[in-house]
Amino acid sequence: MHVGDTYLPPAVSISEPMIMTHRADQPHRYTPVRGTASLISTASQWISERQGQLVSTDEVIITGGATAGLSALVAALLNPGEELMLLAPYWPLMAGATRMHGAIPIAIPFFQEGLSLPQALARLDEYVSDRSRALYINTPNNPTGEVLSAEWLKAIVKWAAQRNLWVISDEVYDLFSYHEEHCYTRPLDPSRVISAYSMSKSFGMAGYRCAILQGPTEVISAVER
Image (cartoon, rainbow, N blue to C red; front, top):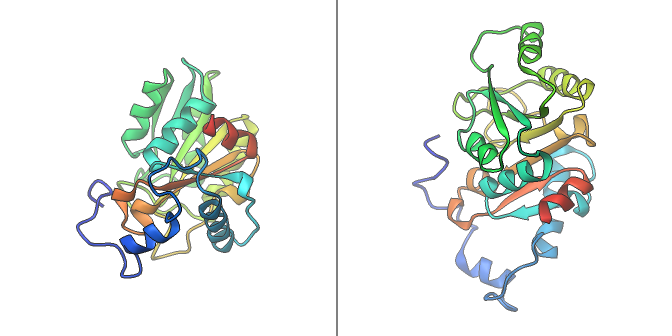
């Protein structure tokens, strides 16, 4: 997986003329903070098709790559001194983004630990505290490649709901699940889960710095601010 960059060119259907066509009106001007209306609409339709349910444009924001989007999300959800629980191993920049906003990353040994589901939930209980505000899940996982099943995700999201925690679901590798179908996390609890998707990973377009956050409308508005 390297660092999420790619040595391959984008798909044949992706080209600079295509980009210019979509921005032919005023390509030199800033776009709206939430993204252009046409891109938001297309992203909403794309996610709807993959999740099998209708996704409103109010639930979607386009960000300058997943790194910027997830960083803004941490700022929107956590106050300084509050904790973000990270299922480890995890994408390392998430801890840095958490510290940058004054919050505290809490690493939880989780992937490739050989845990049963009851043991995994017990492990979460060991690390949750009064300062915990959100739980970060990355599946398919970077760096292990492990894919959490629907059974595991349902149990983890239910665990978070019982403790009134937000769930940040990093799904930038959603199209790279080969041995079993990727389970999308947000439909399991739309009021609590915020999901991230990335053009860098799904379409090999890292240099375009384009990603999608999908979540409750009040959270998306906070990210926009």
